[in-house]
Each structure stands twice: as structure tokens, then as C-alpha cells.
Image 1: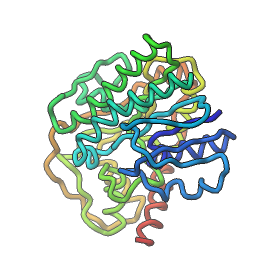
Image 2 (image 1 turned 180 degrees about the vertical axis):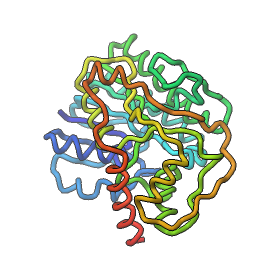
Image 3 (image 1 turned 45 degrees about the vertical axis):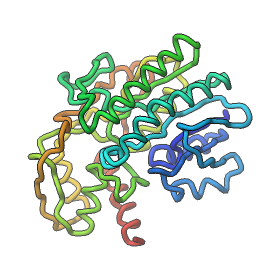
Length: 312
């Protein structure tokens, strides 16, 4: 297949580009490098089946030649990024999704939207199933990301129902691994960089809020399975093993051999208290579930961060 990956120079996008190339596909990577990093895809440029286009998908969108699939992963994804870039986040969720769906329609290509567990907001249902509509504050600071993705899902389903576009929606839960930015701001990169530097590890609130963390290779495997399945309803891809952020901080401190102390700061506004996917739909429809143990995945990630920090 010939596949367009928007946001392809980002953390998830670059792993996806690499995975698709390894399976013999041609990949067009598009990114405006707002949060993506060219280093993530530099070694892919030697492959003649790979091409990079620096472009903002909220603008006029043209890709020469045929496309079999459009994978829309362009968006700021960490609270640090979308709180600093609220307008860009809303635009890429709305205009960017509209542009890429229009391109998929014109090319008669299938389309996959990278959505997020954030569509569930601060959930009142636990764990979160795909038929839960969520508990989102539309005017809160996190609303720019939550509502951008909720709108993107609605637009994707509208193109499917009205125009007959072959669509998929993946709801991605917390994912970690190599190529996360050192200044990403999310829990795992923040805890690792603090631990490796011997600085205090900052936990917000009392650390009792929970998250579910999956390693990047498990996510990419789930996306690949969803691409090939005739499934147009949203599908959660995440690790159902839930842990508190305090337990995560302690685990990273232990795995990194860090002497850092753990300190506590006030909880940000609208920060979800719980986050855990129900992956029954992924198990049933895709035959998917995560395989990489958290300690193993964190060990690989810490080793990568250690190398990157040594170069910085």
C-alpha cells in the first residue's frame, strides 16, 4: 500500500512509519514539525519508499499520486503542548481532520483517525468502554484537546455515513517508549528525566490518580490490526493494567536506580482521577491485547532516555 501518515515525525507517527516500511509499504510522512522532531525519521529517509513533506494539514492539502490509506496522527498530544498551543490543537482536530478526510475521499483511500482516551474526560464510568460518552468540561483548559478529538470523531463518522469513506477510529490510551521528547511534559518522560538527573520527581496531587500505560510497540500492533479489520466503531487500544501515578514514580525511581525524592504539587485543573481502558472490543474484533510488561517497557525507555540525556 501507499500510506500517508500525518504527524509522522512525532513519537507515535515515527514508530508507525517505521513499522509500515518494514512491512513493505510506501510511506508519505507529513508533519509541520510543531511538536514532531526530524531526528525521529532521519534514518528512514534512506529508504526509497519513504518521503517526507513538511506541511501543516490545516492548510490546503495536496498529495500527488494514489493513496490507499490516510492515517491522521497530526496533533499536539501532551497537556504541556496543547495548553501552550490551544488554537493550533483545535485547528488540527477540526480543519486538519476535515482536510485529511477530504483527501481520503478524493483518493478513494481508507482513513484512520488517531483519537484519544481524553474523549472520556474525567470519567464517571470505570473502566472506560467505547459506548461511554464521557464527562468533559468543554471550556476548561484541557477542553481544547478533548473537544478537538471529539469533533474529529464526529466528523469521521459523518464522512463514513454520508460519503461512504472507509473509516477507522482508534482511541489511544497513555503510551510511552523511545522517541518521546525530553520536554514532553507527560508523566513518564517527566519522571524519567527527573530521576536520571537526580532531581526531585514531581507528582501532582497526592499521586492517587490512576493511569494505564502501554508500550509503543503494542499500540502500533493494535493500529495495524485495526487498519485491516472491517471495524468502523471506535476501538480502545491501551493497557488495562491500572496503576497510581505515585506507584509509577516509585517504579521509575527503582528501575533507574535514582536517589531522587518524590515531591507533591497541586493537581492541575480537570486532571482525570482515573483512566483505564476496557479492551473487550479490541480483544474480540482485533484479537489484540498488550504483550510488553510495564517493567520491561520502562526499562527500554529509561535506557533510551539515558542515552539521549548523555548527548544533551
